[in-house]
Structures are given as structure tokens and as C-alpha cells.
Image (cartoon, rainbow, N blue to C red):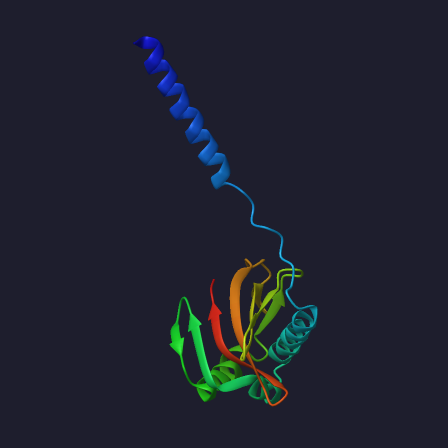
Length: 157
């Protein structure tokens, strides 16, 4: 009886170890489905970052959709392009910069709509000397009439 109990205990521990090891597998490396789409969105992200960092509100107005939904984990939901532009003007311009984590962008097509972009970025206050942490972001881009516009943003900190 002791041998059988030991066998089952060993089998249980061994199978638990196997499951645990399988549970810690790495995600497969990202490879863009479309290099052309990836390059387009990476370019648009750089245009967005430049406009954000250099207070180019006219460019931001062109990139942000009238149908905006902005989800922020700390401040909630904003559904007004006008309110977002005003917040950028009053709280960001000349005060905060965005820095993309190089190599972090992933882009996936959304059929008959555009693309979803995911990556990591961080923000720095101009007077802050400390390093801020990178945080996940998600942008939904709509491609219409030859133009890319951000329609949805999920910003996490």
C-alpha cells in the first residue's frame, strides 16, 4: 500500500511540475502580418509623438477622430475630441513629453476598418529628473479616404 501511495504522490507531483512548466511558456515573438501596414502605423505613431512633444495642436486635430473614445485607467473615459485637444493644450504642451519604447509596437489589421496598435511608452514632465516607468497603450486607427485617424485609445499607467 505504501508503494502505491508513493507512486501516486510521485505521479501527482511530476504532473504538477509539467503543468507548471507549461504554464510558464513564453509568448511567441511578434511578426507583423503586413509589413506595409506595420510601417504605416509606426510612421503615424511617430507623427503623433512629434505633435505631442512639440505642441502641434493642428496636427493632433488632424490625427484624432471626431468619433474619439479615450480610456484612461486613472482618469476614466473621455469621448470628446474638443475636450481632449483642450486638455492637451492646457496640461501637456510645453510640460510633458512622450517617449516610445523602441521595438515595442505591434500592429494588427482590423478588416474593413484599419488597425490596432499596441506598445509601451512613458511620459516625462519637463521639470522631472527621475525616470518614469513604461506603460502599455493601445490605439485603434481608422483608415478612411486615405487618412489615418485615432478613434480609440486605451492608456494604462
